[in-house]
Image (cartoon, rainbow, N blue to C red; front, top):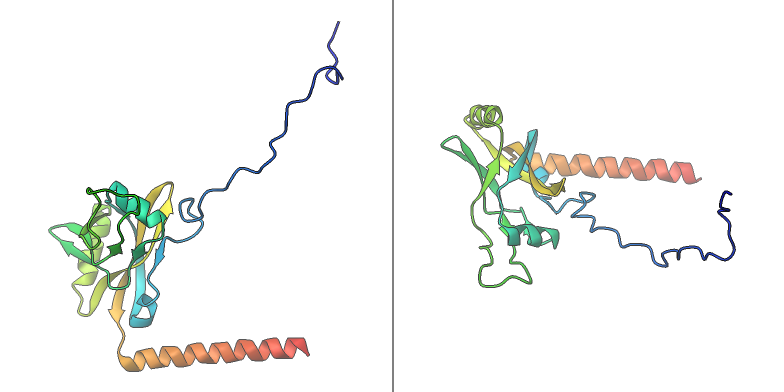
Length: 179
């Protein structure tokens, strides 16, 4: 004889009362761990490259905590390798005496053809490598590098003027839609 699935004598399994906590948006890759806001203000950004970063364990944990700063950082090509200099990653809060140095030089992991392309592009006068953001992809820290050319003061003023014009145009459109 077949069993009845809706037997009143057998209790149903308990339903979970609380929703499981979601992962941190930085660690899950939904939000950038660090973003260089001054990069687009100080430089014309052109080609962008994604590079892995060779880090120590406490550095990864600090980045997850949001203790990374790319404001004064830049990329350097030397002997066929790429390095990230002046990127500040604060000490891990639960670290011990083996915690990392905040401003150490970190190796960037790129394919050989990408390094060769970057070497050719950075040899042009005025071009440099600027890290734009740090983020997680599949549990690994990635750095987005941009080929950058420095802006003069008048370039910055022109950019600011264009930004203000766009802002005023959006406000005028919003005002006309409301009335």
